[in-house]
Image (cartoon, rainbow, N blue to C red; front, side, top):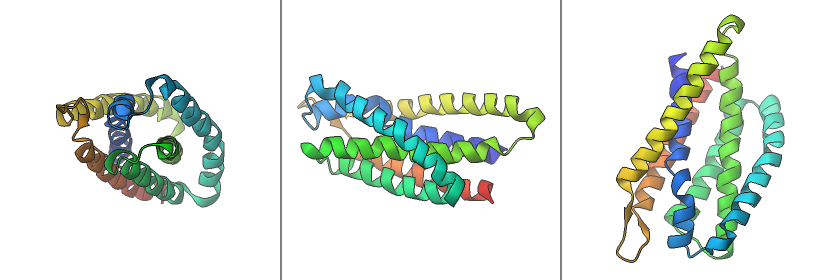
Length: 183
């Protein structure tokens, strides 16, 4: 049970160390037009909405661990190209979409596995504590970002490479816990 909470914690902390700072990063570092940010989130959210159906079917067919590995590979590439290499221009939307979809490719498998852990009579309290862990670790991820990130002299968001590498490391560790729970 505690490893399940650790899995939930690592997934949420890795993602939410980046999520609160995406819009600022896109505007300040990649010169993405502020007036088009909403459209970017609309596209990313729409793709995630539809890809979740595919991801759910893939988890049922291929297993949570296998789907999570693919999701982690996509997440790593999206984070690397968007936040570390800082590809801009037409690639911004592509790598943002990859980041958004890959996040759900990791969330659906871990939630599927976690739902099987408690016995039915304990499921409500297990899921309640798991939800609390998710929210708490989301805030910890955002807090860590606030400690690592700086504003540079030219108004850009600095140290995003460090934060992104940390998010990749946390994300990679989290899927190893999934394998233990799935078997």
